[in-house]
Length: 328
Image (cartoon, rainbow, N blue to C red):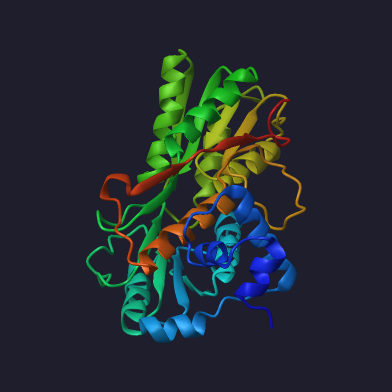
C-alpha cells in the first residue's frame, strides 16, 4: 500500500509538500498538480484513521442539501465527495427535502456523533443549532458570522442572463420563477431587472404560485400572452434550469418556436452525466470549484486555523453556456 513517501517520490517533491496538500495547506499550482497526479497513479488514500484517533473525531463529513433530485445538487455532491476523498474523508449525504425539522435532526446527529465537520446548503436558520466546536462551511446561504460561506455571483448571473438575451436580439424580456423569491433567487432577479433598466428594455416578472402543480401557472400565462400565435416576449430568463425547462416545453406545446421566436436562458447548466450535451442555454455555476473551495475552508478549520472574519464569504464567478434555446 502506498504511503506519503511514495507520493513524494513519484511527484518529485518533498514529503512536506505532500503533507501540506493532504492537510489543505497551500502549495504552488505546479506542485499541487504533480501531487494530485501521483495520488491518482498510486491510488493513495491518506490515513484518516490515525488522524481521527488524535483529534477524537471521525473521518466523516456531513453534507446537508435540500434535494438530490436535480442535476445541480447531484453534480455538487459528486465533486464534494471527490474532494473529501482526496484527503481521506468520507461524505455522509443528508437530503433534507427542504424540511427544517429534518435539517435539525441532521445537525443534532453531527453534534452527537463527533463527525469531522459539516457542509450545508440549508436555507433555514440553523446558526443556533450547530455546536461551536464543529467545523462548518455553508454553500449559497450565510449561516452566521462564525462560519465561511461559498456562493456564486448570483447578481452577476442574473445580469448576464439578461445581457445574453439582449445581445442575441431579444427586446422584451420575461423573468420566470416561483414564489416566494428570496436569497439567491432574489439576487438573480435583481441582476436581471437592473440590466433591463440600465438598457431601457421592456420586461416583466412572472412568478408561479407555491403549489404542487405550479407549472400550470406558466401554462396559463403563456396562453394569456399569445396574440395570433405570437408570444408577447422574445426573451425568457429563469433563476433555475428546472423552471426554464418547464417554460420551454410549454412554449413548444403552444407551438411557439424556440429559439426563432423566443429565446430561453436558465441558471445552473449542470449535467446528469458527464457526456450529456447542453440543450438549455444557461448561466453556469462551477460546482467543481464550489466543492474544492468548500473542502479547503473545512480543512482549514480542522487545523484550528483562525477564520478570517473579514473574508467569510467567497464569491465565485459565473459564465454563460450556449445551448439550443438561444441563437448563436
